[in-house]
Image (cartoon, rainbow, N blue to C red; front, side, top):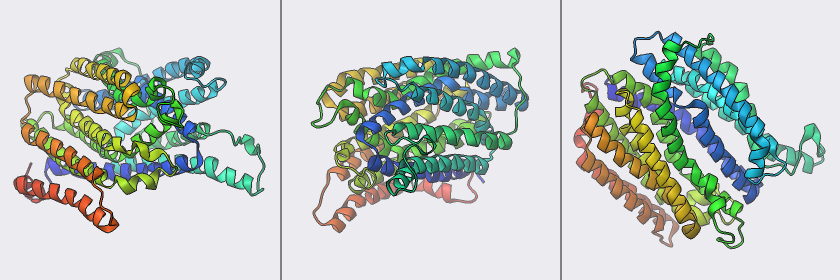
Length: 501
């Protein structure tokens, strides 16, 4: 089997687990928008944006560093695993303790007076996430995709179970007199609290299983191993911070930069809930990006010693663009029924028009991930700092300047602007220091065409429901026909059993 097909196969396994697991999680949007208020959704959006941001600080690029030093530095992989995991456990305890102590200040600063417990739970969630990062990475490195997928799905199912129990089950039992208010300390006035508590319980329960399957570590902190790893990882910390700044900061800051009464009948926090809920609809593209990343990162490092690896990287990029462009069109043209299906209460549909922009933003994130391989395999991670710093600055500037005047659109533009700038910079420097023969003209053409077709299908409306569905989705078929006409050689080579790519 060719290297290309191996990557496709691994991506399919990770993708199946990600899509299945995240789809289950995605369905929670129905529960949240049905049973929780828009204000609670706003709290959920901002607190989880903070968690996403701090998660980068807690793991500081050590997953990628683990792959690099386990595959290409002539070091014993067990020693690398022991040292990396020991370091993350140690720093997680330090950072988690600091956040735990700062919880009262954070509660006041983010306008959650008297709710410091929310941020203490956040500290525990972050600690659990970070000490699971390297064991999960080890499973990926060892090609244990099924175990990895199983653990992720178990974690998500536990999370969903606790969410349904606390948000739907207990209120139903109280309303029917089966249990009383205060049973096991239950409070009907809690909302985002139960989302956080469910996450905390699910993550805590999965730790023994993941550690067992990945292999328990022996506590080791060796300077000869960790010093060069830290030098490699440190720029990746800023790369991750800048990336998550773009992805999450718009949701974190939205309610704070939106002028009062910008949207009639909605407070700034409620508008933030609408923005965050529509952001969630772009998760379908993010699923593909995440599945691809799970499979591609260890794959790229393992292939880096092959003299033909640049050609392989270019073909992977091209196939990625083709697939994700098609997916973007398919989601966008069907938002007219996908949106109301998941966003149950009135008012959420006002933000649907930003979803194609967010889909393109996530697609560009995937393109950037492909492009960034050059500085990871050449140990030039310092460039990631400057590239992502520029991206973060652009993201913040767009949020601050556009959200007050454009609302939801301004938040969405920050996403696409940041990733576009990062892609351009990474491509320019990559071609200078590690040339890869990308099909740049074709890839850019496909992206522009797909984005145009996405908005054409989104705004196109025909009164007859069946005809409306057929015409909208015909745009996907048109794009696929164009791909087939232009990419026959690539398609036939992928389908061939004998041709090595």
